[in-house]
Length: 150
Image 1 (cartoon, rainbow, N blue to C red):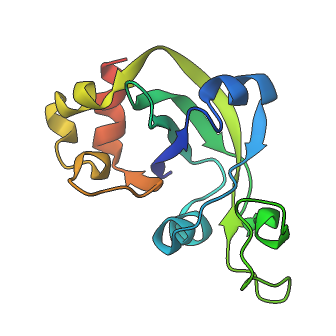
Image 2 (image 1 turned 90 degrees about the vertical axis):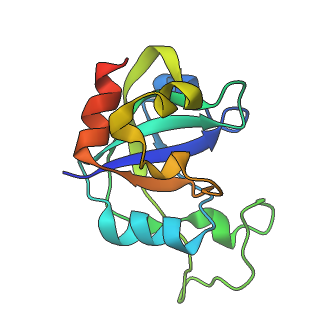
């Protein structure tokens, strides 16, 4: 099993939205490295931290499960979508998504400052200067350390 951290702006889609919906397509990823993680490394059944970005404070709000294999992100073909990509075609799609399933909402958000205070997490990608990637791998040791602090 692999572990992930997946960011969403709280004003776009929050853990509360996923809790209500139970399942959702994780659309709008427009970074090739993040897309490659979803397409090539993520597996159905993997677990991910749901991270609220651009929030006050930003941090881990809960857990979700990867519920599907990679599939085309249909928003790339929709000219009315903010995620439209004129270079993408049905024959040559550029962007993938995964369906995610709600697992748990934490009673208290684990803020970025809280994560910084966990020694086992000092190398986490989310803590690295300039790291803005919306989908990031998390090691098993980091995963376990974070769960101890929830």
